[in-house]
Length: 119
Image (cartoon, rainbow, N blue to C red; front, side):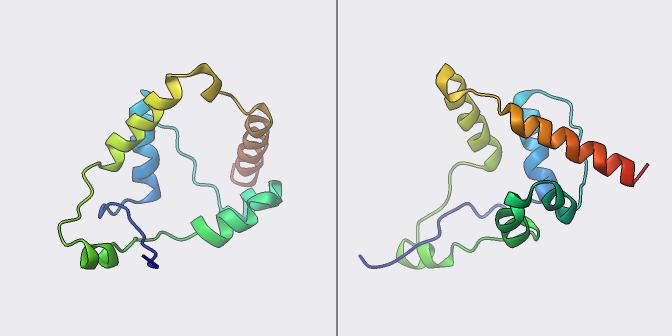
């Protein structure tokens, strides 16, 4: 009681590894484009806090506190399996599946702008 814990796996994954596994899980050929965060924010200022403030740098999460309280703790589900479970959950109910057309238009604009900047 009165304690806060960060609980995750001990896996250390790069953003590329995270997205590649997602591509593999949905059975799509990867097409990764590395777009600078500040360019994304220039097109979509709402991403400032979550992208620049959170995801611009890689992070390794530390489970040492939970392991002090629960020495036998270990994460049984790897990212690759967790993402597959999440995708199955979305597929189980059509109301969980939706396409964000506005975001697709935004990503098309960002990719087009990026390709113009780096022909």
